[in-house]
Image (cartoon, rainbow over all chains, first blue to last red; front, side):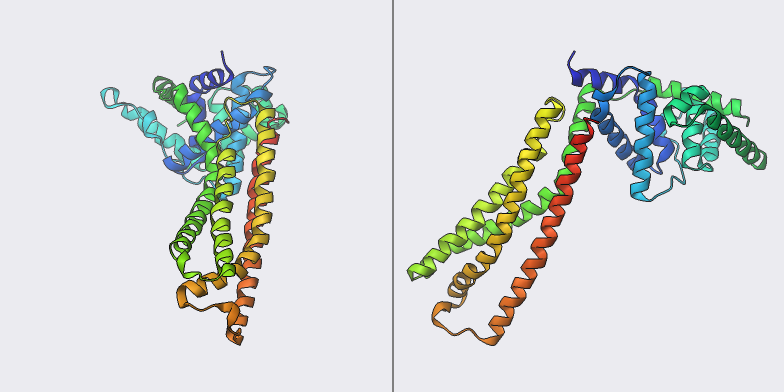
Length: 162
Length: 200
């Protein structure tokens, strides 16, 4: 298998991961698509450097999140309002209003977090362990634990308020 | 809504996303190549506009070549047309080669070598263009004066206003070329770093 076919297979396999990371850090669909393309480009750039020492998804989270943060710095924007991507809403045949309402609420809570917290929240929601989060973010596991406790506390307060 | 509920909602969203995988290998590869090319498209657009202006002036000079009635005016005309056609063509050719580097199929080292070679060629061309733009100023003035006003500037005295206009033009060219060259260096260095990062 050629390198580019292997790369495209990896991206295709993990496109939902990339959608989730890029949607967490952008304000609108246009920015999300732009960030998505930049992430794919960065992944291609570093594809040769992936040494199978960690899971490919761990490496992809790292590159995607770093790229998102770099893009935010460049554009000097803060990801204030995260839209809910249309494609993740249930389709008309299986319309689930409870799910859609919860999804809106989820994004509303995500909106209230800062850039680092968003990243940690994303990984927490993805069901990653503290060690995996540490490996992706470069924080040490105990630091991850402390920060996640704070995020949970913050979320709890926001949920009580709303 | 509790954290567990947030996680459940997120899981459902993940499942929806998994169901709706839209990207194909072709789209992914094209997206990657396009992204690289986009980094160069701005400078190429500027150069294309510049080249069109140069070609138009060269064409107008060629159409009015008959008005240049002395050997030195004809020499100035030939040099003007030569500069205005050759330099932009070389720059566009060099830019095209850089922009079309096959970053998907070519090896890193191969691409880097081609890139650095083309980058140096492009910068050298820019240096030559900067020098020649001063020379061009002195050869294009007699040609345009003859074509537009039918006056041989070599046989008439230079008026003070014309002298001032020439100095202003020289200062303008100095700042314009300096700005342009810095822009080039910035873009090419940034792209070179991009390629170098592959090795890190």
